[in-house]
Image 1 (tube, rainbow, N blue to C red):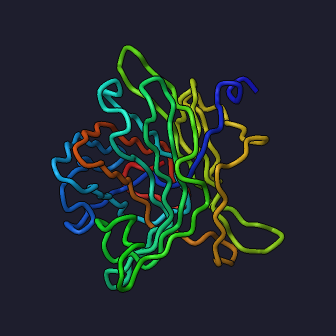
Image 2 (cartoon, rainbow, N blue to C red):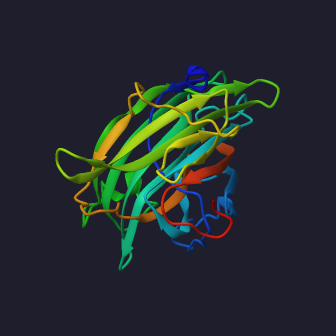
Length: 264
């Protein structure tokens, strides 16, 4: 179909359209991310010698989402850090587990790098690689897409931006009767408008977007079973490398299942 001719798979994962959450100091201690509801922004210069990390989560739980990532001022800020989507986020007694798809610019012409991983037992998001290298009580990482795989975004030379869409959706694997997350990284000339009631992508003009034949960049298994997908929170995520400036926006284009304020 015509729309699919304009959409190319690249890589990744993740989730959510929302209403809309606050974020604790521990989630974004350096206050890098601003915004609410469907749109968030970052314009942060890291003057330290360590990578700065932070995220803002949704107020409601979801089983998938599509988010538009726009990297800005790319001619000046190449490889400055990562923007991404966290999904299947759960926190108990200060310990977090989540899936994440992270994306960075490799050059100013649209070349991107990305990764998809699951982290568990995260107690300090500022620690190197979410704490997987801590000597005591380290976090664990399961890699689902090699860091950093090559992807491609859409370059707007006039605006000096690169755009890509991260889409993660929870689906039932009929052979195992367990749910799994399919993760996509898509670049599109036709803008993604929303998700339908079944979690499928719909273009802004209302035309369904057919992803048959498009391979996900990662598939993440879960132990979830039952007649409905298990829902967890989503979050926009960023890290900014030492001495770098990262500027960009996240726009939630649609979420799956739970409906909150201003959500369709």
